[in-house]
Length: 189
Image (cartoon, rainbow, N blue to C red; front, side, top):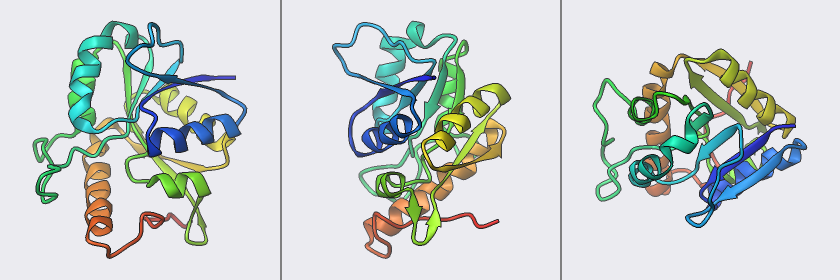
């Protein structure tokens, strides 16, 4: 059994927590008043602008842990661009700030509704996972699959750039009401 700590208890944090619990794993929601982070896997289920403060406050507690970045680093004022360099990603920024953690990118191409329902249309929801540590990716994939959702290894952490572009596209389409918040991209093999 794996303990997963989730920083953030909004729609995404709650949906991810539901998947973790459905697989028989333990969920710990971490708030500002939580002293220690006990999970082997820590999910940053917060908006990108909140990440720097969390890393500054909890960086030492995250050392040695698998840290999962779910953010889409959007310009939330205009919704017309990402706020990271074109050749980089939010995950790369987090990995540089947490050199003793094993950083993964996952869940950013999923909406909370598709995680909660475990479907995108008539297809099963798939979580794409990018990272440089194969054991960390496997640990997260095992938790996701145990919870009833598909997981696909999307490659090295450098692939986070493409995952963030997909997340950006989905979010802008949803904000423009061209798709619903229960929609998304599905992988069919």
